[in-house]
Image 1 (cartoon, rainbow, N blue to C red):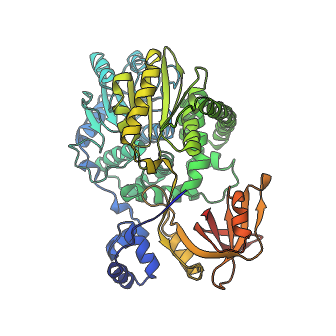
Image 2: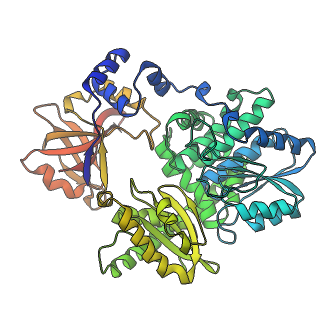
Image 3: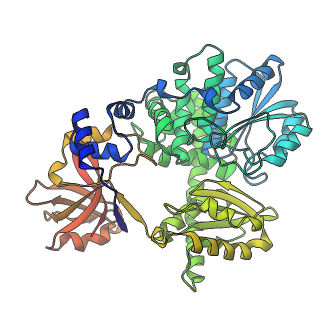
Length: 562
């Protein structure tokens, strides 16, 4: 692991903010590193308010989108709410359809089949709309690159409103309105909304026309927070406000479908991390293993007994998904090892019968293992489909653009993307992708990095510090859990391996005679000898609370030791 200490703000700035906020200098340093430099910014950070959300009408085409929906309702048109099959897409569809159906009955939902139709707006979906006399489609978490599909719909007399957050291509679809803050000429102040976030801005605009306030829309924020967590968008600015209030809804009065999912776990209070690892995989499992419509049905359900039945079905999908994920990951790792004749900057693997629903998870696992830009391919109809994952600091979307002459289509973000190509292009693409990455990546990015906020002494770790750090939540990209480094540590003689095969490390550490503090290092059992020997060692860690037999104590959550 590469240990990188973040640049420390000037002492003058630390002293000024520390005095202005009446906080410890360490807290002032952490805030400055997050771009918070005065009292008002700190207040907004620690006390997110709904009135910090931007006016939805600042988004390009919002007036057009609202007017077209209002016209559709006035004319009693059939409206189809269309979304992608992942968490962001299915939560978006549940949000938009349940909002519209509060006051308008002619609303249906559509999630494309991952295998038969693939990502985004499909010709099959448009045909479904035509067969059901739909004249307006609201497309969520997709559509920004669907130029041909939108033109096809237009010929059939079907209007489309695109609500997306992916990067636009050179040509925009001829939709009646495009809501995407990443459009170059969109003046919306916050660019990092997820698809469900863009959908929420649209219902916020529609609600304002009805004289409703943002407080009336709080019950929908459990869906938005779930999408923010699952889509790994920055938890800064507007996303931070939406996630903060959405988590409150999840932990106090979630919608029936989310409550049914939570009831299957042993968690009493969920954090964003819990949403990422407990709620999101289950919602995703529907689209991966069966059909994304199952997730929309669960998230829209209003009867708890029925929702429990749906949640049980989704739990089975998730169990099946986990088994496939493990099996395919093992096969892919063997394939990489067998084909490694030279040092490579990328991992590209392919097997025609790998389950398309889990190749994204497998790509993430391979990236964790080999730490390089990774693509996992499988057969999809008469083409090959792949999920791409990147390493921190490298834009895999740009790398795919450099290979676009080999591709049928692609889309995504800096760190995750999807693509399709013709089978005969596979070897050419594989070589070209390796060449592009080799020529553009900083070799340092091929070694995992631990980014450290500050070096501290163990005597600085107090219950008061922990109380303040907890207020930095919700954590995520752009506002990660603070990570610290301490030097010259020793074990108090307590170190031992725990867990299956003793792969985890448990210890009690001290520094220069301080009172020992408990420490847990997951997957750090191999560092036991470093901890046990007489020489002092350095450690990187975050702070955590350990609850045992009703007693809560501070502990170090170790990231690495040297």
